[in-house]
Image 1 (tube, rainbow, N blue to C red):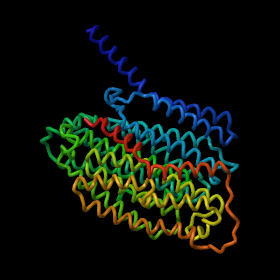
Image 2: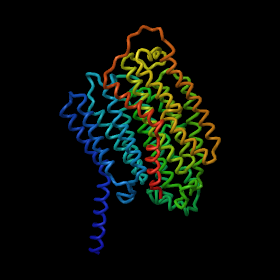
Image 3: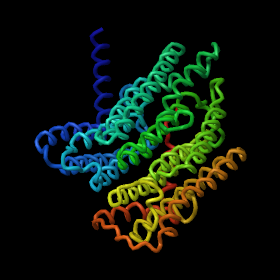
Amino acid sequence: MDSLLSLFIGQYVADLKRSLALFAPELVLAIAFVLLVIVDLIFQKSKYITGVVALLGFAVATIFMIVSPANTSFGFWQMYVFDPFSNFFKFIFLISGFAVVLISFFSNELNKSDRTMGEYYTLILGMTLGMFVISSAGNLILIYLALETMSLSSYVLAGYTKEIKRASEASLKYVIYGALASGLMIYGISILYGLTGTLSLFQINAFLVQYQGPVFPLVVASLLVLVGFGYKISAVPFHFWTPDVYEGAPVAITAYLSVASKAAGFAVFMRFLKAGFIDPSTASEQVWAVVSSIDWKFIVAVLSVLSMTIGNLVALWQTNVKRMLAYSSIAHAGYMLMGVTVMTEGGYLAVMIYFFTYLLMNFGAFYVVQLIANEIGSEELDDYNGLGYRSPLLGTAMAIFLVSLTGLPPTAGFVGKLYIFQAVINSNMIWLAVIGVLNSVVSLAYYAKVFRNMWLRGVDSNSEPLKYSIYAQLLVYAFAIPTLYYGIFWSPLVFWAKSSVLMFIGK
């Protein structure tokens, strides 16, 4: 008995050591989180030192990500997955973290004299840590805990400018919708656990391969879990919080929620489907066969069509640029769901490529909105008249980002949509590709209104030119140049995404 116990303890310690070594990027973020709290206590009056510490934390985590092994393995007793698929999304989170901190440095609404910023950057780090965990989680309870870690931070960040009425309203609505989605999700998880006797996605898969029991409880449980994912990715009909929260939150946080939070939702949703509900014996070149009686393909296709269509149509009527981009974000969730719908490696590859391009163009667009709001104090479309002449750099950059969001060449957005439509057509879902193309045409109508106002209206205005620092200009270039570059030379991005999806642990 003693020898068996010693053997068990030895295996336990060995697995823990190996897991912690692979867990190094997450540990770095956790240490940086604690360090930020201490630094904020010491340097309470400094607005930027905590932001610099956050950037250093992201930088060190990035270094550990780069030197980490490229192989695939499990950790923490199969609760955690280390694979290139999760690493791809973790790089998305780190780039988003860098971007949101840098954008926040140039935000007038955040950097008021009477506001401390230590908690702000601490919450961003905490939210990023939750995203790291959720992208690698292979256990339903770990997924739920990571989702709550993300959500609690985002609730506070959305209302961080609490003296602004719309920010407090946005935070409150976010909490209410988030609590409802969270409750439904944990109820679905409890039903799944009752049916299968396990919380591991991989053991659930093995159970469902031979499942002969009643279908209805399984359908209900899966749909309830889907509510949690749908809420996080802003898919219709779980999108009601998105426009108000995106409009009321600080611009930097709106950009962060629209990219990083959405990426985390897609990462865990794709792993949930592949690891839990798709036949592991299916050949990788074929359409993955669903092992349960739930028609996931139809469900995701419906969510995709609704998100694209409603997001684009409602965006047509918006007069606030920030709110328009919020509905645009809902529509882009629909485009990405097209790749998930086909349930092939090509579809998942397309989603990953789309996310990287979406990061560049969406952060860039929101950053331009912030710089303009800093100068004119408005986000209304009518106030954008003639801004292209008052600031040629911002006008040109905004045109590049909006063309990319539409999906036109030679921008990175074109590459993302090209691979999405290619994956859908290769799966013989021509009808879905047609709907996607039609929605892209609709999106051009409201994007064109922005650069129409910036370049074709108010041309004769003698208003003063917009002024901003050289550092603010450099950050505009940092988003605009890659948006154009990856629209012409996209092979490295495709290679990176393809190598990540081919080594995706889904069984």
